[in-house]
Length: 350
Image (tube, rainbow, N blue to C red; front, side, top):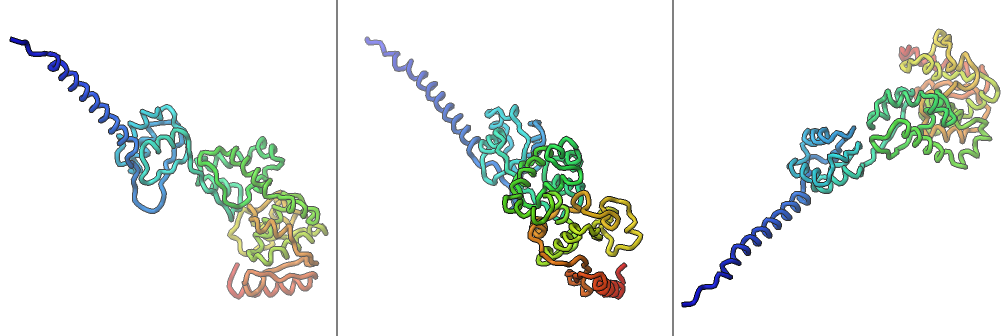
């Protein structure tokens, strides 16, 4: 009687084990692909959400993501973070959370510091403190940190400016910067933008104006405080240039408000003019030490393209249109001033 072959029986367990291993491997691959590539960022609303990472704390990143409730399956994110060794490579910054993206894409963006820049805009800024507060609101730095940098002699001397004029480096516009930029790097960036702004064409006009770049910014700041009318700015600039070149005190009311740091004043009285400050252009001739606000491009160009005339006096029009009456003689100016005073009194403006 022939014995049954045991060869085939011995192969069955091996095949089963092999198939099981393959199934496990395929399952692992499928799970890996699912974890890596399945959508894992979701939130409602039209506005894009961002993740702000101020330091290299991985647990803080997890806490922030959970608080924002933008990752439906945090286990997927944690697994991909571990696989990509992200916990040891956290980079501070501002990162966009793109609706519908997967964990792998997000982790790689975070690990390799692919930040989304901040669109930084500023205008209508009066003081250095205002500037620091306005700019810092959109960045990781605090207003105190930026203010301290702007007031640091080592920094402003580096750029050939001073404590009163460093704000002129900030040309009001829209810039793209990274959220975690340092105050020093921001000032350096603004200096580069300032140099770009002062093109050869603009610099060529300085000789005709008879002022330096910083002095143009200072005069532009006064022009901007005096009038909001674009078509009137070159005329106002020409008037103050006449005073500067003739050695006549500017007697600009906005400089008194700046000296007093009281921008709520609607009328300037004799007592206000006694303020002993280099910014008081009634008391001290010539331009003040620096800008009394951060001047706009429009106002700077108004100075560079000033209107050539003989006016040395101006007074707000009595119709409160925002325009001014201009005069060559003091007598004509007094007549204009009397009209305006009567209009103020009739409206009870003090």
